[in-house]
Length: 193
Image (tube, rainbow, N blue to C red; front, side):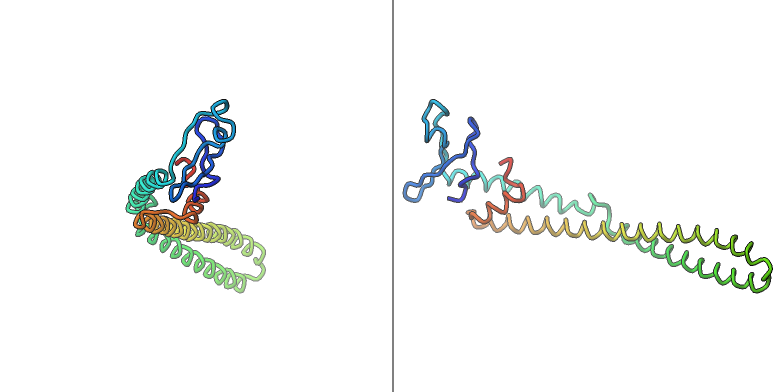
C-alpha cells in the first residue's frame, strides 16, 4: 500500500487507512472505519484513482518544469553577460594589482632619491595603496559572488533536469512506486496534491 500514512481525511483530518480486497486497495477514513458516522462520514478512494490523479498532476508539474527550464537563462539573466561580467571583473582585478606593484616601485624609487623625506613619501603612497587594496578586496568579493551564483544556478538547473527525468520515468511507466512517492513527498511535491 504505497500511500499508507500519507493520506488524510478532508473532513476530520485523520489518516486514511488501507484495506485490500484482492488486487484493489481502498483507502477509508480511519475515524469512520473505527467509530462510524458519529465521528465522520463514509468516504473512500481506490488506490488506482489516486494513482491516476497523481499521474495527471505530475504531468502538469513536468510541463511547468520544462517551461521554467526553457526560460532558465532568461530568468537568471543571460549566460553570455555573466561570463563577460566575470571577465571584466578579473581584468579589473589584474589591472589594479599591477597598479599596486607600480606604486610600490615608485615609492621605493622616491625614497631612494629622497631618503630624508621617507616618512612623507611613505604616508602618501600608503594612502594610495590602501585605496587600491580596498578595491582589490571588493573586486575579489564580486568575483567570488559571481562564481558562487553561477554554481548555484548550475545546480538549480541540474535539479530541474533531474526532476524532469524522474517525472518522465513515472509518467512513462504509468505507475508509481512507494519509493517514488516518498521522494516526491520528501521534496514537498505532494504536500498540496
